[in-house]
Length: 509
Image 1 (cartoon, rainbow, N blue to C red):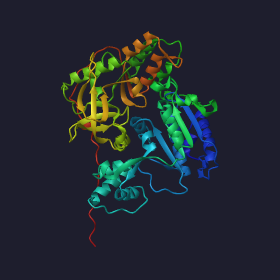
Image 2: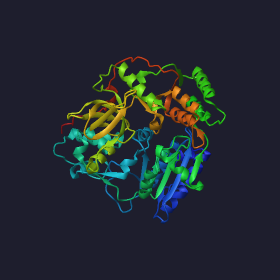
Image 3: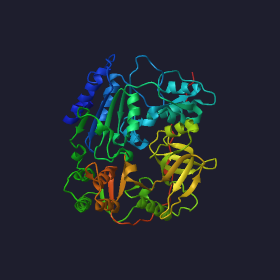
Image 4: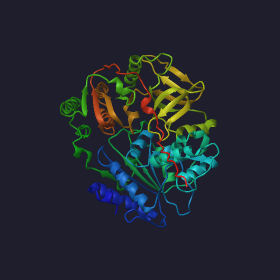
């Protein structure tokens, strides 16, 4: 048995066994590491829920490794290789690039839902490179590609397991080797979906069409999708299909951020008492900061989390002012949030290409500079496997007390962006940052309004989601003030280094 499995807690082990039970009729025996012919039957969906720190990601990783050892091929979405009659498949998905990148950093080869719903069509010549990289073919000779370029692609793939990123390391662009995208017409076997609280009904139905076995991982304490009337897809499943992880593992490490998040479950806890808890935690642990102002240096890479849209707009404009951003242009290094694609139906191919490269609604993006064509922007998509993108862009920077936004880029059609120095807590779901600033006056306003969502005060759900976005440090901002920057904006931290190659001289015979 996988040694990782033996390290699971009692509730994690129980959930593992239930997943094993669900997969067995599909011919997948993860307990003994065997594949057998499927027995048929109805599609199965199982949900594993738990609050932050309950070990959902640890369990997901253990299940992934057990399925891989049983013989399932992991579909990474960028290249699937040759079809085999007896091939059995697994895909690990997240709603956003940022959420997928969190899993990849932990050794789990996750991708976005979109990259599974649609698969790339490769140029036949470059498909030979992909086959070689994945161990399915001989090393090719490609006109225009040097031996060094191929070795660079190989070295990159060994470290990152991404075909597009490896080909990019060889000096190719996506348009060189991906000729289009097609809706997946063949089902896969098993899908594991992280951050399932963000799924809407349409996405859920699409996934059920592809995966006869679907395992959802979600946090019922987070915010439901805006269009879902306060409910999450796993809350509509029958009770036997939902398993809850109740033990909080990360609290064992005395994590004050998680302690605060879970304190919100106390129905008697009011906002003022909660703020006292934060102040006390800050006095004894540097991972919690009681901050009298917004730290502007952090806003370029990790946005301030707010509730009210008016607060978001004010903070964004204050951020631009302190960096002396011109009124008619963007500075290199400014953060953006993708707000969707403004493309008509006849440009479906371009839409699929942009979405597959990471420009989906909610994606975090850094502006790198103007593109070669008018209206185009060079962008860094945070968390994407091949992050450097050039796209026709429509950038809208909303202004306080004005209906019309400032638009520094106004392509006739393309990817639409809002400024990303501050974002609403709803849009922050699925993302994590090392340092997170939460704008407390907004949560106080939500508490004063007395609004509820799914039987819980809205301010508590907002606070829970905001707090649990922090990987290492939480800054609880209590005043409407902004610091001055310590240095100009930069993009130096976004350079994607090529893998180092060592050339050795051959001995003469």
